[in-house]
Image (cartoon, rainbow, N blue to C red; front, side):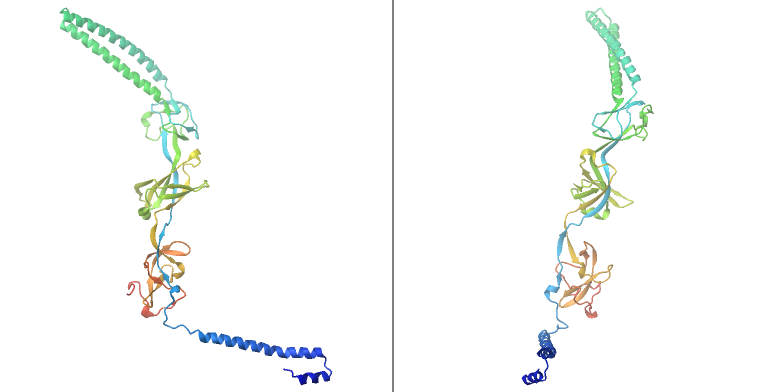
Length: 393
């Protein structure tokens, strides 16, 4: 540092005061920096000496351990399926003949009982007229036979008519009565055929197919053979979603299980449930056939659309573990159990739960404590356990 005498000597030599002050500042600056650096070094040295290094055999602090617990988890089951009509019927004629008139087109909405098409019925109407005339004739003969029987019966009672005459009149009466009954039966059959000549919708629905046009002859004997249908009717309100679900989920699927449905072309998510579980298992895919009923006001949902489902079974308890605690390769993960002051390897069987955690299928139980990856990354041989050895007591 400059002393007072040095300062006066510089002034007497004629050096300006400005230069003297600048020189004093430049000389003092390194001394000031050295003073503060020494103070900071001494403070850091005191802190180092106060913090004792961790012991090589010291146990991890409690907050560093992860205690295994169980949680109630609902893991959605994903499934795909197809939208189907609640009912579907190929309607053919009940009587054979030529299709004379079709009253509906594809896309028409029909109600139960609406006329769909008519088979030619000219011959049936002629048969009805003929049977009606025969019925009147036989009714007249019956009345005549009855009058004759009553007359012979009275004469028989007076002893005038013979037994043979009485038997003959009684037989004539029974014959006339039978003819009347037969004619009535035939007439009823023809009337029913005339009614059946007009095919009607069996239920409220929509026309989805028209297989033939007018003028085609169709035999009723081919009914059920696949070539006798004229139109197809489907009941599309409600519709049914038919799901294909992996058989491994069978224990988790029950009637009433909640389902969220997404259908191609339908922006809204539809909520429903499992209404039917088919006892038949698809042998080729080993999948369950389950079905959900969906209300379809206005026929917005079309049969045949592709659908996806999230099925939410009842909650079940599982062991969830953060992925950060897993060690080893993905196909053979393990964790470090902390027990009795030692770390032991425990191999696990897991499956994905979400991006942050896995579900432990085997290897861990509630209450066990696991070391995080920041502790004991190297485990000595005397505390390492193989999968077969299990957890030492």
